[in-house]
Image 1 (spheres, one colour):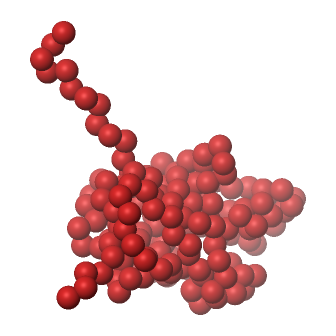
Image 2 (spheres, helix red, strand yellow):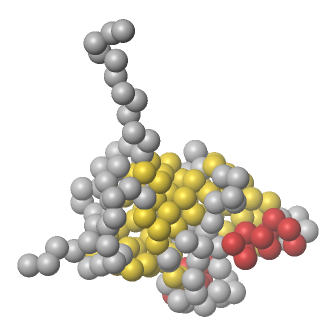
Length: 168
């Protein structure tokens, strides 16, 4: 029996530029555009967003959950897209990226994108997600289903510092 690929162990965060064209548009070209980070999400010097891994998500079941949110707003709120609490689920060699669905009952998640998982190298991993039909709807049809999103990286945990139990 061939074992299905899995996400690597020891992941600290998800690093993702989401959609670089959309991000640039909201930040640079929408007159009142703003991007708000909340609940632990951060932006690195390369423009990628970092979503911290949630402690209660061991990943043993093929699901890895991250916290934080990135909210895009422009045109007095007419354009409003929020990427919140992403999860990655591995099934049959595919990674499914889900986020909180703000337009559905509480607890509902939207499958935003999928990516192929060809192998599980040690340490970090980069995936190339593509929008699903529901994901395309979230971007108001501006990007069609199957359109590529920014590469998604899994940040490995930093190694534990060496102990000096023996003293000097």
